[in-house]
Image (tube, rainbow, N blue to C red; front, side, top):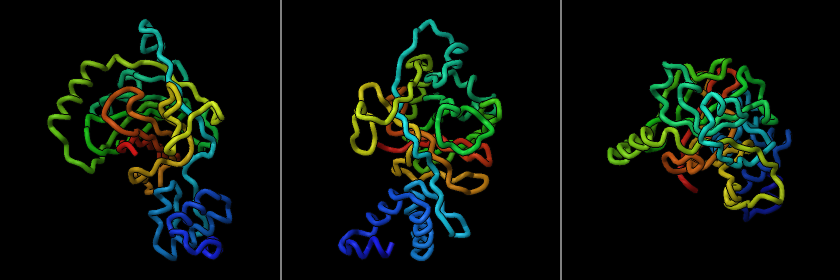
Length: 270
């Protein structure tokens, strides 16, 4: 960090922190841990997707560097839910196919399911699929779900930071009922290449692309820590809510490989 500062003493501190994160080598992550501990700026690096272990030796990137863009493709109206769930990355599943009865009361909407065997660079997991879902809530929220080896959510706990708007909640409740079968489709994983449009930190200006798998989180909300072990959760994907219109803003999924936790999180537009 001192070497970066010596190179450009007019550079703001936060940009130097971004440089360390972007370099990402073991040496840079060791410097990151030392600097964060000595300056008490751990949260800054956690916002960038790096976990600072208690021993302070080296920061850990909680995201895969292998990125793919998510392109939506609609499916035929005649496709049954049982057929839809067999696709690698389905959109618009009934809640009963992604969660057991105990967890279903907390989940009102399904955005997507990802086949994790097709995502490079993930930690070792006891489950092979993860679901990005939503509660019936209009403000900022994080929904923590325990997932079984059968890829079903078995328990769900909601954390919120904003009060509900009764009028907006009523509209969302009506949408939940009236449009539960709308917007079905599947996602295709596209390589990060010159066929994508890159703007404002994401690829969603590309036709029919609604988000990305892999890469660091956008950092628009506080990245979730596992409710069981406290470790910063591993960022899986971020999409725009317009993928399957429900609420407004970005929606992200995070994993804890040790505790079999999946977090779905909302954040506003950037």
